[in-house]
Image (cartoon, rainbow, N blue to C red; front, side):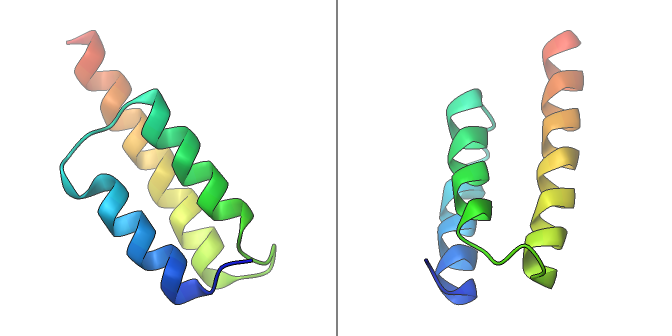
Length: 62
C-alpha cells in the first residue's frame, strides 16, 4: 500500500501534462485502490476523477 503522500504525488504527475485518456484513468483508479476505503483523500480523488472523465467525454464529443 502507498501512503497518501505517495498517491498525491503520483496523481499530480499523472495529470500534470493535461493528458486525459483511458490509460491515465486506469492508472488513477489503481492509485485509488492503494488508499483505505475510508480515506478522505480517496473520496476526494474519486470525485475529481469523475469530473475529469466528464470533462474528457464532453471534449471528445465536441
